[in-house]
Each structure stands twice: as C-alpha cells, then as structure tokens.
Image 1 (spheres, rainbow, N blue to C red):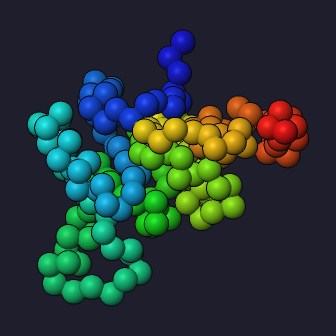
Image 2 (image 1 turned 135 degrees about the vertical axis):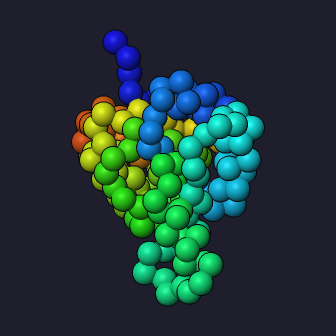
Length: 172
C-alpha cells in the first residue's frame, strides 16, 4: 500500500525528485515567504525540465498593472505554484496532485488562518500526495504535534480535545 501522507525531515531534493517521479501535473509548495526563490532554484537544480513554476507574490485582490499583473496571472496559472503561508488562502484549493508543506511546524497553531486553509486544501485533494518538511526540532511539548499531523493526516490523531487530554497529562 502506498501512503499518500508523510512527515519527512527537511529534504527538498527528495521531495522534488518524488514529485518528478510521480509525474505530478499540479504541485503546490507552501513555504515561508523568504524561501520561495530558494525552492525555485532547487526545482531548477533537481528537476531541470520541470513544468512552468509560478511564485505567488501578490494576492488576487491586490490592484496591479502592467508587468506585475501579468506575472501574477501567470503565477496563478502555473502547474507548479510556490506560495507563502500568508498567501495560501489565495491559491485554488482544488486540483493538486502533490502538496508540500515546507517548515510544517508553522501549522502547529490550530486556530491560525494558515492551519485552517491548509487543512481545507488537503481535505479537497484527498488523492493528493501530501508531505510535511521541517528541520526544526518538534515539539516543544507533545501538543505541538497535533496541528502538523492533523493537516498531513486528517483525523489520524482523533479530535484535538481527546489528544490534548491524553498527552497534556503525559507532559506533567
């Protein structure tokens, strides 16, 4: 059986190679804003003949003109889209074959907009391969694991209340 959800160590080349080998036609890469260009460089390095890549830099509602507007429109139409957690709610939530959450520990807060948006995107793409990458040691406490795992594997840990009750007592 091939599992579609994973939490990996921070291994960008392995993620890119896996997406390439899967022949995924629509890939969403979610990462901190500062590393969007790094992801583009890594795609160029590890998947030299990759499909068009769009780096989401502007929200759809932002008024732009000229070349910036054309760049934004092209980015939203690209088969591989790289978006920051802050602009995640701007991308189309459906139609993804691969979804990669870089620095997945940013989803540990289950009340944040990024968590809720990520959870919604994963639920709308039930056949997508979903990977979470992080190089940050997790958790500070067991309850910090709930958010990232619940996005990557929806429902795997049960309801948050029961998870927290069970593992908060273990923390003490």
